[in-house]
Amino acid sequence: MKLSLANKCRARYLEAIYDLLEEHGEDVGYIESNKLNLPVVEDGEEGIMVVTVSILKSGEDDYVAAREQYSDKLRERAGRKAKADAKKKEKEKTE
Image (cartoon, rainbow, N blue to C red):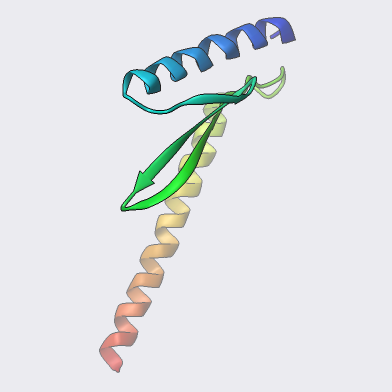
């Protein structure tokens, strides 16, 4: 995608995200041409969320493979956590 079209597309999506967050009462604002930020509170803890929208350059458009890689990574992480939890339970039994 040409840079000018990518910029136009990114701006359109960023505006839609901005509008959605604003409609939900969030204090959202632009901090860069491709970034929004908003304050968040979770379980009494405050933080700042940054939302970044980017359009990949040509040749980086295998979005299906990227999704699959991320799913694989999450499954792998869940497997390691399950193993660690099982080890921890086993250790607690022997103590």
